[in-house]
Every structure is written in structure tokens, then in C-alpha cells.
Image (cartoon, rainbow, N blue to C red; front, side, top):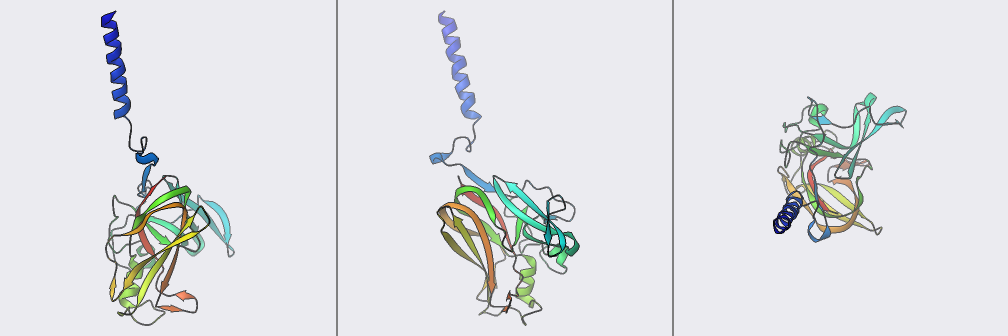
Length: 247
């Protein structure tokens, strides 16, 4: 009986050891919160190296043209992409793994970044929004995300945008206002300067939300000193990667 008891205790101890070693940080979050990072690596991309929606989404009418409302989802976070085939146009959040950094033609060069690589892994997100938002699907604590310029915006900064004359000078600027929409109905804005004081962002930088609590979604708006009556004439794009949050 003594031997059987010892054997039973040994089996029980092994069971506890296995249960602890098989758990991940997500299973046992520190301080009761799970850590998460959206990396965009779940999306498999074709030979062109980008996705901006496709004809598998839900159909809707876009000013008389057939369009498709698509989504990319990761870690419970939704990124909409609205695609209109007849116009070869899109808006929302595209995913790219392209390594070129220059801009010559709209497709595929609007999906190039200033860096030519993701912050981590292979994929990154190209932001070009007309009301589309990143939806976290619940209230989260947002640490922040990484960002850099997109190639068409850089080309406009260096060479002019073809609408507002001239390249950027030292007093010109181009920025994105990122709005966190909170569960309590309030908002928090963070301004990202993509070009300022004669310089432009050409590496990955961190947009710090300083662990802002209660964030349900993010929206994006752009502004520039290069503008007309309709708004900024600088191409209103930005690239983002590795969105860090807790829930």
C-alpha cells in the first residue's frame, strides 16, 4: 500500500507539472489581462503581394457600381476593406508584404511602404480610410502600434502631388489623427506627424497610447499643408503593424 501511495503521488505531481508547462501566457495572463499583438501574418497573399478586398465579400452598391464589403480578422479585431472591381478601387485596411519602396504606378505601388519590410514578420497593413474603423470587438487596453509612411505619400512629399504645386518645404507637414473611440462614449486623439520640418518618417516608429483603457475602435483622418477645398492633396495613406493591446 505504501508503494501504491508513493506511485499515486508521483503521478499526481507529474500531472501538475504537465498542466503548468502546457499553459501559455494567454492562458495565464499577468494581472488578469491577456496580452495580444495583431501582426497581420494570418493573411496569405498572392504573387502581387497585397490584398485590398475581393469579390467574396458582401455585395453593396457603391454609387451605381457593384462593390464588396470584406474583412480581415485577427485576435478578435476586425479590419474592413471595401473593394469596387469596376473602378479597381478600395478603401479601409489592406494587407501587404511588398518590399519595394518607390511609387510609379497606382497598382501595385500604393501598397509599398517607406521601409520595404514589415515591423515584424512579412505582412503589414496599409491604411486608406473613408470612415472605416478598426473594431476591437470589445473594450481593450491599447498600448499602441507601429507606423511608417506609404510610398505614394513619400513620392508626393519629395516631388509634389500633381494637384498642389511643389514638393514639401520646411514649413509643410502631413499628419494622421488617430481617434480612439472609448466604451464610455468619449474619444482620445493622438497625432502622428508623417512629415514635418523638412523631414519625413522613413522607418518604423511607435504610436504610444500609453495603455489607454476602454478602447473599442480606432478611426483615422489625415491633414496636410498641401490641400484644396476638398481636403488634403497629399495621398492620405499610412502603413501600420504590430497593434499591441490587453483585454
